[in-house]
Length: 452
Image 1: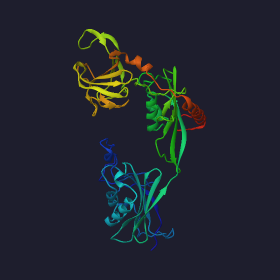
Image 2: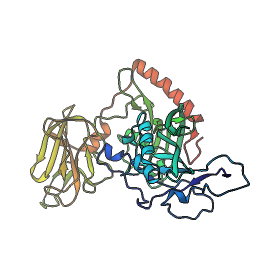
Image 3: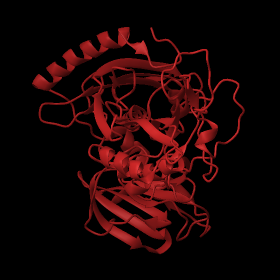
Image 4: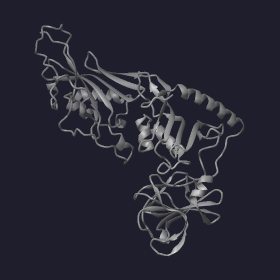
């Protein structure tokens, strides 16, 4: 009997499973990384009818069909791509494909020697090769399986001549590449930078580094631009191995009225972060605003109280924001008050260096662990926007005290102290600036607009 050799890239789907991916749960690490799987089509056979496959026999060629044209190269096989989804295991997926339980156990055992199957993420790809044999009791076998749990390492399972399975590891070289993205802000900095190809990690770094000087809800105007240099690792076959990191970035505000530039640098006895071209750290003793995605609804000074209806000093700034918006500690320090406090509702007060203190009122709730005498770091979530106490709607009332007396937080934020590089560190920083500037002039674009 003559059998034609046929390799088909096929859609393999299971009617018992939903086609739509479930969103990742934020409940915990194991929820985000179950061992799971449901076949998902990567490529369909040309001119093949679009229909779900409930029996692998419908995509495997019939071994009893004779085809006199091609030579006999042995039983044909099907190659299929499977994406893992929440709720399944590799073993269950192989079982649905018609693989015998004993073979499934052998395959899982071989994989477990080198792969943490319980930590495979949702969306993990499996490439399987299935073959129909001329044996009624064993119509389908897995002759090959490939899995790449991380960009630089792949594992290939192959069926041996004696029916057993062996595992081989393939290691890919990883090299860093420096790339550049730039563009004009259209709608939001986040959306515009993502459209230019900036990965999430570097984008978060860039936003945090500029946040001490730039309020992204108020300062960005039409015509403002961003430019960022990203160092990212890539495998030898062209896959990104990490999110990368920012080496340099620049942004304009006020429609081009002001420009801010930052360079990554690590002092000899300090932590790596970002500095201005003059060697001044971007980090201020206080954040400009204690929460993102907000607007100023009431400023510091005398005003008529919206509930009590008489004029008195408004000893802080009100930021209107949706209920539940995270509130950040404006600076590092220790908590001196946390709990209900009269008309302030849920209230947190933090003492900082330099005889400064910040207060946060009307919180819907205080974050876990934020209690009297607790240490907090700058940018740590200390509570959530609410409307407790004497409040007409959800907002944060933010106060800044110096020497026990309230002062305008916006004025202080503009003049907050920064550290500066000096001596050998400044000399090394200037040399690094020159090298970074040289690299960014020749860096290839990440995506979108070409950079000059």
